[in-house]
Amino acid sequence: MGERADTAFNTTGSKWLLPVSGYLGFPLDQLFALFAAFWFRLYLSPSHANPLVRHAVATLLGIAFLIFCFGWYAAHILTVVVASYLIIIKSDISNVHRHSMVMAMGYLTACQVSRVFIFNYGILSTDFSGPLMIVTQKITTMAFQLHDGMCKKPEQLTPEQRLLAINVRPSLIEYLSYNLNFLSILVGPCSNYTDYIDFIEGRHISKRLRQHSGTCNGQNGYDKTPDPSPMNAVCRKLLVCSGCMLFFLTVTRSLPITYNVDPHFVSQAPFLTRLTYAFFSIQAARPKFYFAWTLADAVNNAAGYGFLGMDDNGKPSWDLICNLNILGIETATSFKTFIDNWNIRTGIWLKAVCYDRAPKHRLALTFVLSALWHGVYPGYYFTFITAIPITMAARAVRKCIRHYFLGHTGLKMGYDIITWAATQLAICYTVMPFLLLAVEPTLVYYRSMYFHVHIISILAAIILHQKHKPREPSATSKTLNSTTTSSFSSPCSAQCQPVHSNNNDKVD
Image (tube, rainbow, N blue to C red; front, side):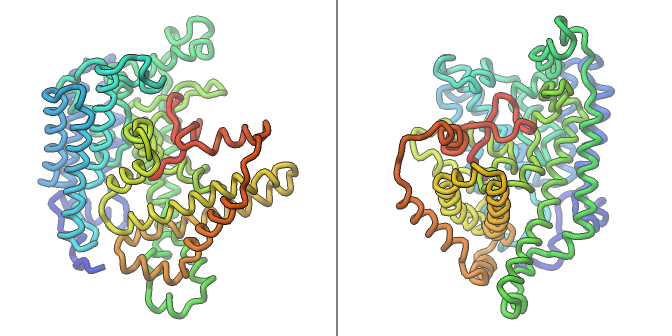
């Protein structure tokens, strides 16, 4: 899309691993972070090192990874972190969350704008926006939690906000460690400050085992139970990563996204052929994200971070900061369910800093924040705008039609199959601009699809809204509506979500 042929090799970071990384199609920096995480857990565990040493080493390793990967561009991430700390210690605590949000999002947006205009919709080889996006989440998350803990009374907070509130300003080393630690600086995910400090200071696992003391060891519980090992969880997640990499090397490369807007393909292939290729090319693009997010989760687990507690079977769960639920994504039968299981931690962040706090127009403001956070490429905004009528249509269908299929197993199965296919095709149609980025290829793709999803979703939303008449809700409909009608109202995945968090109707 106009980028130079040698752009991929024009980088301010180290070029040592570029040949191997270019061949595999995956960055190798997270693999080094994985080895460092194992070393950190074995040799710098809370029983072997005090919190100051753990903070310092985690920070220095994170900065080293930044410089290795991004060269002098690492200064952008360091600048915004230092500036945000100055706001934390100098700003009026009653406005610290506002000032932090404006500064972090403003700096991120300025960097995103420079990428668009300087690199002309190309993909910047030294792309530091990923770490900057993660740091922006952390800065704003902590600022809001600090405001909750120091400016609000407990009764003014939700149970979740009370649990995560911060009652004292962090020290410099704590702040740098939280934002720049090597576990999450490159890919994330964003986690809560209190959870991270518990991990560094050695309370992370025991604190959660205390909540399950009866399950762990009779009446004495966590005090006599050794810390569960994360090795099973790490091995399982690495196995998923291996499968994703194998899929990428054998399938994804043979289904390039850009072929959807190839002039010959668009002009010569029948509509059903184009639709089928779009579907499979989008499906094939997902494992790259699965790989990155699952590996990031495994890195944190390898260091001993990410313990959620004991599951219903009494086994340890290491999904505190997991970022996706692959099974939930691939089997989603609604647009909302798909979103609930994709980029989970970003949805939690959007809920915590925007949706729960906006006095009105909460959904619209959350969409805007999500769009700005992702960047300023036009394709992102095509995706978010397209998602609005699709979401409205999906809600209308569920409200007006779904209950007719719940009384019979066969009908329910048929309904689920149809809604699964419709959801996957709608997701494919919606996210294509997100991958194409620019205006011209996006319009080429939508014209080749005859804007059919736009038209169908708008008509469905209008027709079903007119036909739907308010009625006294039955017990069944109350149960159904309680899980679908309110944005961010219930947990999206018990496996991947913290017990105190929920993630519904996020708009990432």
